[in-house]
Image (cartoon, rainbow, N blue to C red; front, side, top):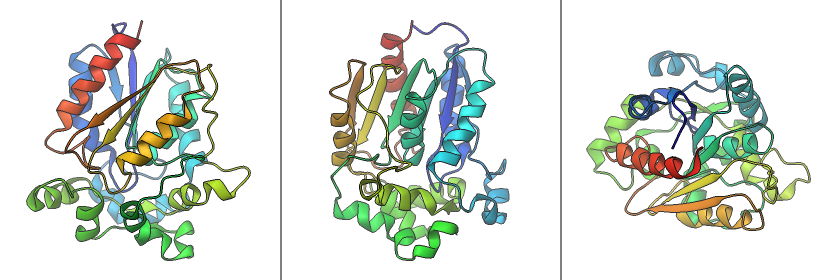
Amino acid sequence: MAVPGTPVVFIHGLWIHASSWSSWTARFRSAGYQPIAPGWPGDRDTVADTRARPEALAGNGLDAIADHYRNVIAGLDRPPVVVGHSVGGAVVQKLNVTTRLAAAVVISPAPIKGVRALPPAQLRSSFPVLRNPGNARRTVTLTREQFRYGFGNALPEAESDDLYERYAIPGPGRPIFEVATADLRRRSPAAVDTRTGHRAPLLFLAAEHDHTVPAVVTHGAHRLYQRSPAVSDLITLEGRGHSAPFDHGGEDVADRVALWLDDHLQ
C-alpha cells in the first residue's frame, strides 16, 4: 500500500497534451497520492496555446525530455511513482535507471534500443514524421485521419475525433528518429540498461489493438528486462488501442495501475 502523500508524476506521449491525464490525477489524488502532470519542455498550459506555438517544441529529443522530468523529480520531497505513455514510456525507462523512483509504469511505451519487432502498423503510424528527414528538427501535427489510425482505431470514429479536438498537439519529430535509429547507433538516446537490479519495480501495459506501439513491441521491451533481478511485470489491455489512457476506458486502466501499485509500494 502506498504511503499517503506519495508523489506521482505523469508523462504524456508524443502528440498528446498533459491535460489528457486529468482523470488519472483526480483518481490518484482521491486515493491519497500527490499527482502532477507537467508538460514536456515547450508545452503550454492549454491545448490551444500549445497549438499556437509549435516551434517551442521543435528539436526536443529523449534526453532533453528526460532531463526536464529529472529536474521535476529533484524538486519533490520523496521518490515518486512515474507513469508514462508512448514516448513518455521510453522516458520513464530512462529515468528509472538514473533517478531514484518508488515505481515506474509504462503504457504502450515507444521502443527502446534492443526491441526488434517492427510491425507494419507501427511504420504507418510513424510515417508522418519519418517521411521527411527534416522533421527531426521540426514539429509535426497529425491530421484527424492520422490520429484516428494511430490512436483511435479501437474507438468509434466520433470518439476518436473528439479526443483529437480535446488533446492533440504538435509534437517534435526528433524522438521518432531517435527510436527508429536506436539499433544503428552505438550511443543511442533510446538505450536503457535493462539488466540492472538498481531500479524501481516496473509495470508494462500493452494495448491489444495499438497501431502506434503494437502489443508485440511492448512485449518485446518487457522481455529485455527478464535478466534483471528487479520486478518487471506485464499487463495486456484487451480490445484497447493507443488512446487507452485517456479514452472512455482510461479510468479502468488507472484502476489496474493503482492495484499493481498497492502490491509494489511500501
